[in-house]
Image (tube, rainbow, N blue to C red; front, side):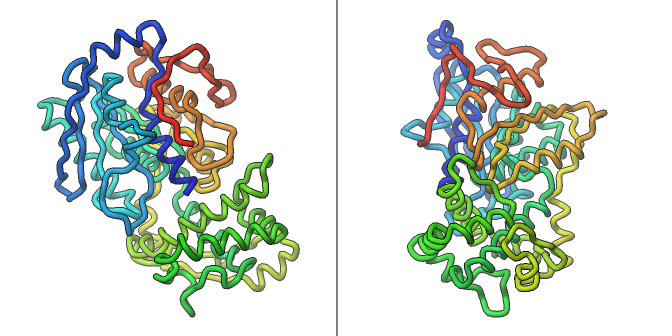
Length: 414
């Protein structure tokens, strides 16, 4: 689906560096990628470590991947793009590269934080000493893995780049997803079946037949009922592209329903109960809000799950530089996560928070230069200087404009 492909785009681009045209050939000629070594971390998570056999700059870039459905096999994520292999690309730029599958798929944020710690330790054991600088990068679920890791394990990381992650308030993020499914059921009843008497869990038949039956049904329902779809978007407070409202209303709904179908049951199991509660929510934006609020399904959260969510909440307590990157029109993980994180970040801390805003629709929908500029800022924040060949962008109102006249190592996904 579109959102997951865009996460793959970030996975490939967040690690790419925009090189000046003049020294590009000289830099690349000095670097020889080494062989990647696969392993298994103590947790059972898979690991991959790749170190240039010559030309290594001594620094390490770690990748924390985005959400992967619970029913997929455990594997590395987003490493092949358009025929380019990401570990080789990163090594060609002079960095060592390391990533992990995490020990499980699905809701794996806390496991991801712990597995990144184990990955750093595995890298240090492999080379016999820590990297000069260790940059942790991640997108979507990997974005919150990155933010939590920088907050909780500053001794291991030089800084982080957290892209399009639910870093502001994880409970509100879960409520956003739950509200959209609840409202979808109100406006489009019976399109996605529910377990009788249990509106929270997803029937296995829906999961098994999502691609060939229920996804087409959702797409047909929202495409052929634009009035109801508009009410769904408004009441669910979801993002669409104002320049293309009809098709992006469909893509937004498909994105959010995919996460609901494939993330709900696993999330409930991980959290020890249902964390979603709308008993006292007042929805607005429909043609008849009174009827909507009297008729919509009401669901109570399990106290144990609400308590478990606290472990997923960021603190804003930074002692290392953190750069964040988010589109204003993110339909899956709304931009308000950035505003909430800014409110909780401690301005007197020894770390720093740099938040970069991209005015665009879609989850993790960044251009090459926007992501490269974000990484350039992170390196500058960590080292205090602009690294050779690394272009700092002209940041205006949080937006990263195109970096003209640069040569970029990048991978595009259309």
